[in-house]
Image (tube, rainbow, N blue to C red; front, side, top):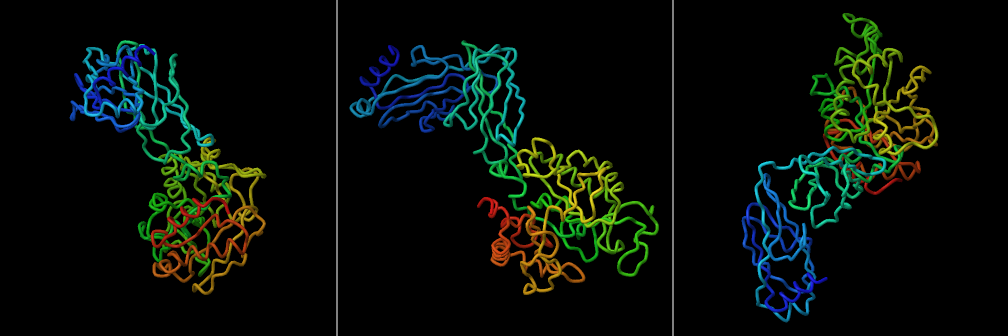
Length: 469
């Protein structure tokens, strides 16, 4: 109180400009965000109007430490003023003694390192901080900068902070760390990646069956990989990067007869080797394990993403499982045992971020290969023109939790022109809204050809932002 009274008296005698100076290398930041002073701009005149209620924090440059204030009494490590507007206004035009932040260079500069762990289900980020060789008496973390609210000060090693990240946009966030040992203060700005759930923080608390997923029809059939008559322009990796979170894939064994003329699909291959093909493997094919590896690579690199595969499968469960093991993808598979679906956050925390459905019966030895029509229903997939679309149920029980909304036009080959017609708004969103109303269900898997054409991804994002159906 004595220090605060002295500071008020100083300002009341001399001041409405409280100059700031810097000795050494560093910056002064303020709790208001309006009274900052950078090394490049100092000395800073710091004109004050109204209530002068502010806390200053000194941020040394890399290789420097903050050693104290000149003009702030005995306050350390921050410097606070609380001067009422009546005093500030009555002495407008005068200047107070400067506030000076003193930075020095040391020969044994402290090192600050961090380790982070994230709970998508709880929407929290835990940050462990280590400082060497300094032994801090306090460590502070500011997730949103000094202007934002600080996490509670930790004064006992090990220094650890858990902060709510539900309001943070996914992506790289700069968080400020300030440590001191009573004599000097050191700071570090740490860039920490917040993943979110399928790109959005609010989806972390949403159950799996209450989310829309942009879904690609015949995802393996694409022009990037040179398929004839493709249904997609991008390969599976490109589709995932664009925002697809559902993939419809067709799998055949090399020795299967094709449905067009009965000839063996791939006569030069091991007849039991599984491939991604669309009806006729001569138009394009890829070993199943290679296609699955693209999904593994994506999930490895994107820890906040949940992906669904919907197989049209002509491959045995054993061969499918072997391909998943070869692609190191089995580790991500989710098995639903009935009841309520988990949230995306819970699935991410559990590491079960891949849901695998297929249109053939479940084998007890592979319960993660789930029979799709035990869980989902769909609209018709054989529309030739937009007028052929309807909201009628084709396969599956309309009381099931998941709705496959087929929105592609069927012809001999894929058609970018048709995709442009039905993937674009207002057509797409109008049709989704219509079928959701008719079926009283959320269109979970918005399934399209040529997802890179039209408005599918942005429409799904906008629908997810509105909340569950």
